Length: 169
Ligand SMILES: [Zn+2]
Image 1 (cartoon, rainbow, N blue to C red):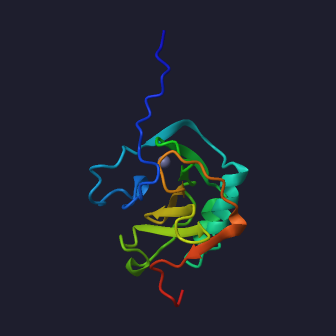
Image 2 (cartoon, rainbow, N blue to C red):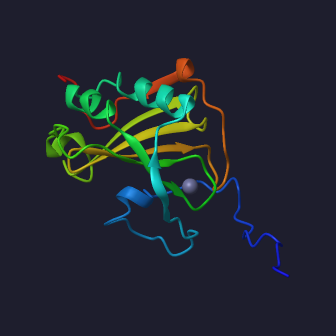
């Protein structure tokens, strides 16, 4: 008989995340005491749920978004989920979709890894982040301050974080 005892480690739920994870983890530092957060590929890509779609569309109205991302959203599918139990999903778009070209000034990590961020209310509320890697939307991150937490985020309550985007954009 299989042991069905959950093997979930007791991560401190309130621990503040200090670095980027998953899709943009490349080049991140000091990950030593972080749990392993992995991309769990789906057997087959699936459409976005209505909730995921609504959050994505809210981020497509971020001041740093680009028309190419809106175009990519027409073919976007979920191709993986996050191992930590949070509702973040990894995204795949058709090969023919146009890339969204950013400048290095748009991201502390450079043009190849851009984040469109929004949060609910004051800082510390749930965050929703569209990660754009090499011009393509790669992850819709939904983060509520701890691994495995699944917040419900009302897209109408999101406040955009201008982040590193040049103010003339
Ligand atoms: Zn996660």
